[in-house]
Length: 379
Image (cartoon, rainbow, N blue to C red; front, side):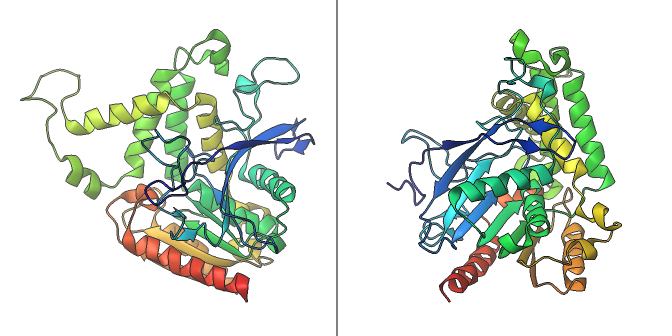
């Protein structure tokens, strides 16, 4: 069944792992679950699989609809589906919710087997390397020895990059979009302010708010509002809202007066109603810690020395959170390491969020690259 040219109605499934997972921080998960969705069919050779890695607030629901009544499809429906850049007629596509997530995979809202209560703040801090390790275990369960491609934007792109370093023989192509080889100081600062908004919320209860049947809505709302501003570009924001007032004339108070204020508060409220605060803390920390070069004397080219994958790297002109210069830093390191890389900088006024948008030049570039991946599979 297809709806608006998408993969149609899809059903998530939970994969249970009864083996332990040793984490980078020294702790161990005795067992864990990963929530996934798959689209398309795995071929007989099992060489047409594509992994989609999500960004900070993403999940396993990449494309399609869960019910016929759903108004909105998965978060990357413009990219994944029949006849789309990542064509489900040619590829077997896997989307997952990472460890620490709040959409079905084991995370802070899950039961801690040691206490019988939810993990809450006791859920261990996880890293991109931990996610990649768990994703490799998922690939084993699915019978996928080598991914045709691993694709991700922002934090998802970091996972794609880490895969090529940790499991070089298991990745043929990596598509790293609107991402960076490590966070800038400014990005770390933004993340800390967002976390402080949550940590100082009166309802946070030291991370065990669920046990008190509370939600630190205020902190999560502010964190999202601030984060959302950084994902947008002044050009796009100004074009959309300008200084348009929400009602007639100035009100001379501190309520909603400008349309942009109304928009941000709506986004904050919507996010706080669907996302877990502890998960937000975990995801931002994973962003902060990501730096594959640190294990190679801060030499990114050396970190990439054993990489076997070919790369597609894309950035967006008005993305100031993950600026084109950061993508170029990765491209230069790949070239220095004598690796295959294609790079595109897309002109866009959508800022960091551009990687989620239906931009013709961007989607066409990915489609051309993935078409070559598909031809490579057949050859």
